[in-house]
Length: 226
Length: 401
Figure (cartoon, rainbow over the protein chains, first blue to last red):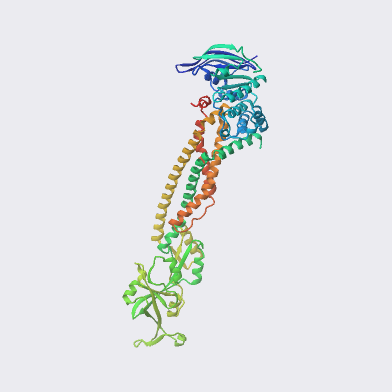
């Protein structure tokens, strides 16, 4: 069953067509990599899927609901309930420790629960770093806190924007292992990246160039066990 | 407290405590503002009291005179004086005048209480010293010149009165009786030996008198007839003084109390202008402080744009972000207000000690007013930048644009 569907979605900034009649269908539990060079429209697509931006035209159907017509408030609520975001720059709140950063997502979603937040940190191997401030964590650890924060509300979709862009190889592998685990558990994943190694581990690879989807293929080398 | 509220408190506390280097800057701005507000407030409300006390160096501002041709007796004076608040009554001095002669030159002797004179006429300039006991006199500069008296000279004051029965004079030292050859009436010349303790210079009519103690004048005249005039010095404003006069009039009908207009009117004028000046300075400083606090809070919030964008990306509604940031501002405003109101008292006291040489009166009501003003100003100062900050597009902010 399809979780997300983009129907002829375009985004125009003045003369610039950041996204042009993009059509994309994402099934529940699917792991998709969106790849392309800088300025290809990856971030625009991510912002539209993540309900942080609206398309100039077209429809975005999420879980059977056309979210392009929703009010800003409803859109915020929808995004909060359905999507977990992972950022390249981690974007942790610097004065809150790891567990508090995870609890912030709970706070805006429903009810903060420290025990659940610690469990989420345990899933990403950071339970013993729960009381550390972001400044006391390495880049890889910060990204894992960011993933724990994205997971905490059990979203239907994890949307990751260049999640390994600021990490070394060892931390990149840790993050990708976490994504594999999430995929196995049935979480849908959309990973925006320009890194072929990150793209190659996804189930499906969508390539963008100049705002257009130029290819959308299953990754033949994808393996659940990798 | 439910988990959500606890998390709210945890976030606000963490922001205030763990970002303390940033928060201290904002807090200092608020404390400075609150200190100035509280300090100038205390000075503004204390200026009338302080100035009234300062104006007392100009001399008495109320005069008691007998309401008829008689004199003011001691009981009436005590009743009249009891109308004034002890805190405001600086002092009072009774005067009793008698025409006498010294070296056969007519001169007016004024019997008074020299300890009261120091309070009601602090501007008196004395060469020599103030009489400290009976038998000593303070000679007005003009009288001294007329009589050729210098400090330390001995003088003999003479009082003449008709004698009907010589037995009345029993026990009185230093007197001579003589008979008027034309009328045959007997007169007594009673003498009082005095020592000139000091020469009085005021530039006014006081220089024409010779001041002695009340006991001396009673001894010279052989009479305890009461006072001709009483000077009263009260540290109060004109309207309050008028109320006092009304009370004195009601309580002691034999005393006619009136204001010394040249003193009270000029005091009132100077004070009104001074109050206006302090008020204007307070308002200007307060406005500048508000701008300073608003600028600081704007800067503090502007640097958290990314955090606001992140919170929005995590699903926070604008109202929720505003509540969090505003709470931080209100806590800062409250803490800054408490610290500032106390420091303001210290500041006002230092100013008062330096300007008026007396401590400031602590006005407890200014504490809650300062704290409330500090919270409101900080809240308003936060609202403007927060309102614009929550309108940010999270996607752009998180991309670093």
